[in-house]
Image (cartoon, rainbow, N blue to C red; front, side):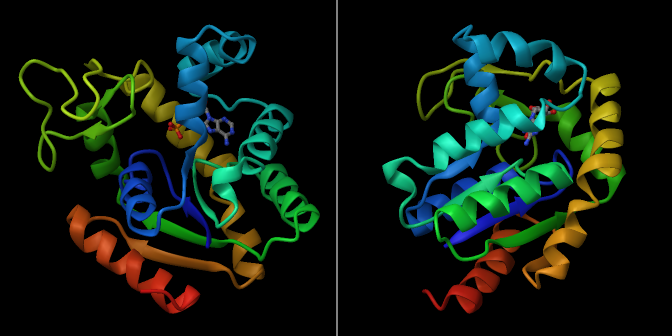
Length: 219
Ligand code: AMP
């Protein structure tokens, strides 16, 4: 099962990807999480990505495709995976198709989660994450504990440096200009569906899961 969770920042891709990953036992691959880990570990990639991310811009397609090629070649990906935050440009979508052809994999299904922009801005501004495991906290659906220590892994719960109003608006601009057109790529492949993300986490999950079960004939 090869899935792409698609949509603007803050629509809930990470939360839904984690739930799908748990249910279907396939890895959740978040390029944003991978880059943040590289920044934390101060690797060469992290040094390159830090400034780009803080400006709300995109890391280069070459770097991202190299990262994904490496990650999806790992052993845990052999029965499928869920991409979250990738592809983000037409070139990344085309590069991903090439990788799929090279590895003889079936076309992925692209599931877009749609949320109105004013809700996105409110969600991102309030969002907190565990800097260690990436768990997402939201004051309404999953509030962070008062000590700001992640109940799952003991990591620190923080606000992402790019979740500030100015960078949020830049990320949304970049999304509309460079990422949203990628929809048409998967539409033309007949591998594109859209779900309403302005509902509870459980309702959105049920909707996505129904699509997944029908498409892949799984329970
Ligand atoms: P995310 O956690 O998906 O919101 O990603 C955080 C930031 O990482 C983005 O705003 C980009 O700067 C960078 N990033 C993540 N995924 C990609 C990608 N596929 N292509 C380019 N930049 C990315």
